[in-house]
Image (cartoon, rainbow, N blue to C red; front, side, top):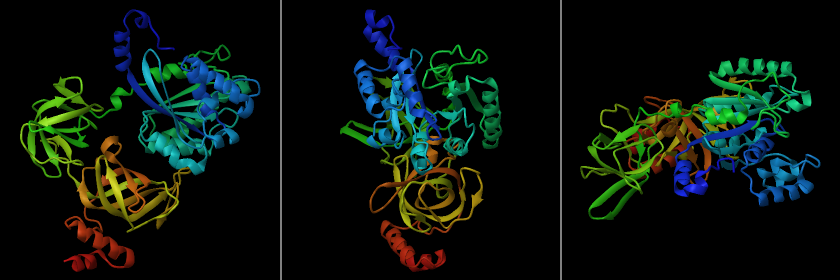
Length: 472
């Protein structure tokens, strides 16, 4: 293994502790069909010595049946495990792989290149810190390159690595690399991308992936692995705004009541004054409990249990914030929405919206416009179909704490759930909260909300003021 060290032989406990505290980088690979995404991941795993012998034997066997590289080992088969993927030589579903080096731990999301699987690519990008966008050196920047770059930008991925693959087919022509770099930068500037790096590679033969290639002496910057190990992701986390969505109330005995969850953003200390949303009740943090020990401070990404000095009502779905935080809850939001279901999304149809651990009912009160991810043009629409991306107005039955997604990914994201089938049909990123709106549900009981939903379904032409009169 690439992360092996002398500690394994001398002090296994120290080695395990060192490995446990390595920084974790989540990244995805994306690009057009046949750009070599799966092969690149296979090469990363192979050259960083993260493949077991039995896995290699299985790949050697499968190469003769499904491989597309002749007698060479088809490393893409390490990632493309579905039968349909191996038969067609494409990626269909998002595949996750894990590995580590001496400097970092990694989770890779291999995402599809086909346009019809845009929703899968968006799913993979939603939790990633960095995107590796592959470009076939023979074709340069194509439509899918722009599509995936736009989605990565939309989902808040701040670090982009453009891997110009198959450079071996062009004899590592420096001018071809420079042209692709120039074309991509012109496009990236429109999206506001700031951290973009380029590396010429051959995923099939391993040039500049983990080991530096002798065939590109003109390229003197970092290899792909070196870029992944040094990307500055710590600064991306929001340590300013404390957000603690309560996932579970732990009550093992009469003397303990703790509120469990993962800190979405910010920092909390023992003794800090906090308040509970939506109730607004205040207290102070009495202790920060973990499985191993009690802490004096905790920060974004840590799973902890908080206890409070006062006995106040805190339930699953509530959010703890600092007492002096002036953030406001809202029931009317404007958001980007990625639709992920065959059934169309229509305005005023009722759905469930899940923000962190809180689930509320609501509907799309309007669709402002659809975004063409290939050209970034805006078009008017009345409904959303599969893989569409649009800006929509949300009207919720209850107010929620929702930050701007670009400012806080953890509390600015939500999913849309079908009320009947309970399946996820869409995902969204909050742009801003809005005043007013067409919803009249904010102050009504659950029965009244259900009645409102039925009325909207059967009498969609009724105005909000008519609904309000009826509910009164």
